[in-house]
Length: 179
Image (tube, rainbow, N blue to C red; front, side):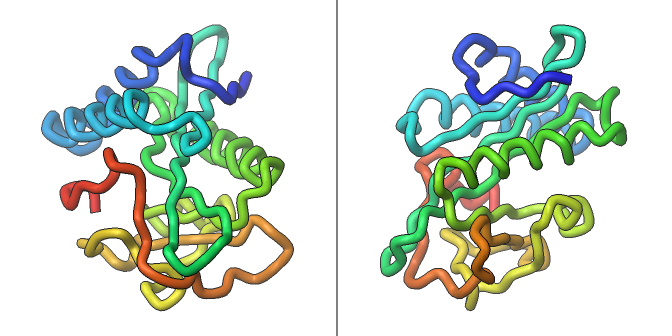
C-alpha cells in the first residue's frame, strides 16, 4: 500500500472513486452529490485550504480522503474538516480507510493543524481518534441532521477546548444536503 499527498495527476480517478463508492452504499443520488462535492473542491478551493490523501495498491487507487479548512470567527487555531472519505467497495474492511486516515491526520499534525473535525459514523471514526462533540465545543457551519455524528479531535498535546465563534467551511461543503 502506498499513500500520496496530492491529487492533481489522479483527479478524475478520485472523483470516480467517490461516485462509485457512495452510489454503491447510498444510491445514485448520493453518488452524484458526493462526486459534485469533490469536483467543486478540486475546482474552487485554494491549495492551502485542501489536503487530499490517496491510497494505491498495485498501482490502483483504493482510497481517498479530503480535508478542507474550517474557520471559527473568534478562534485562531488551524482547523480542518474531513469530508468526504472513501475506500473502494471491494476493498472495504481491510483497514485501508483507517490507515489512510491515520496517514492524513499525521500529515495535518506535521503542518501545524490544531484540530480536525468530521461528520460521520462515530464507531468507525473513533478508531482513528475522533470523539463525539457538541455544538458547544465546535459549532457546525450548518444544522446537523444527525448530531450524534459530529466528531472531533485535537492534533496537539492539548485537550480539545471549545472553538470560539461561528464556523465557516469551504464553499462546496456549504450545502445543507451534506449536513
